[in-house]
Length: 257
Ligand code: ADP
Ligand code: MG
Image (cartoon, rainbow, N blue to C red; front, side, top):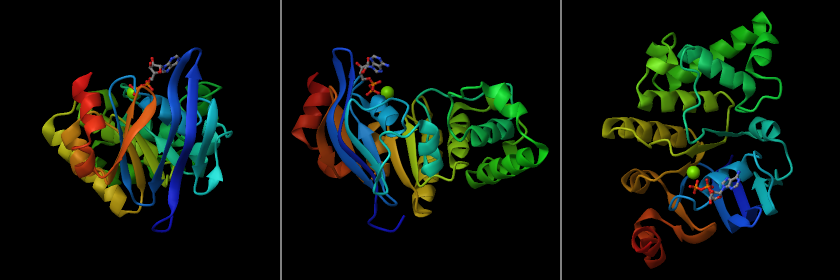
């Protein structure tokens, strides 16, 4: 994407679960090479917003546009192919498989972790050549994120911070222009958070756009270019981190509740 291009536009997005409006008329944008934070108290609708952007859930109303085109009605697999990859709030690695296999499997599924035919069927349908290509791409991305020395280690034996980065490597195999990360720093030690922030800055320098849900305020304030704040399904504020930190509505949402 060219500098200044709108990579993602969420337009008056709405999601209703029965009587509950989880996302209510939410609009925001992510520009090329920008890191945008999506923050707000638990239950604010952040993960649901991710699910709307990635086609995991259908919108009740509104639109989602990626690089100028509506993706609102596309299946999640097609959305991933167009260039939006994500990680989930909870680690989704197969602990007994190697780091390399985990990333290659993700590359094969192209980030869609709800395969209709099941994971094994997907794996078994691979031919040797395709498998070699996937393993090569997985290794390349693992080196890119600094985990090149752990290719053949069981994923479950890595520290949590490294597992989160493995998940990012898996998302990178989809060759995304936009990366969605759901609470990647949760539960990490300070050093692990710093390593994660360094990686995300490196990806931004490579031109990638990142939308990140995160509770850790220090992490978010130091990393993001812009913040979108949600509470009870609505967008209550948007702006640069320095301004958001002093925004009365945001302080009320975090401290007043
Ligand atoms: P956040 O990620 O900001 O903590 P979520 O998007 O997970 O919030 O949830 C927003 C609201 O929507 C919550 O009240 C949650 O219980 C509800 N919700 C989320 N997913 C579903 C679902 N699949 N069915 C019913 N309610 C849901
Ligand atoms: Mg969530």
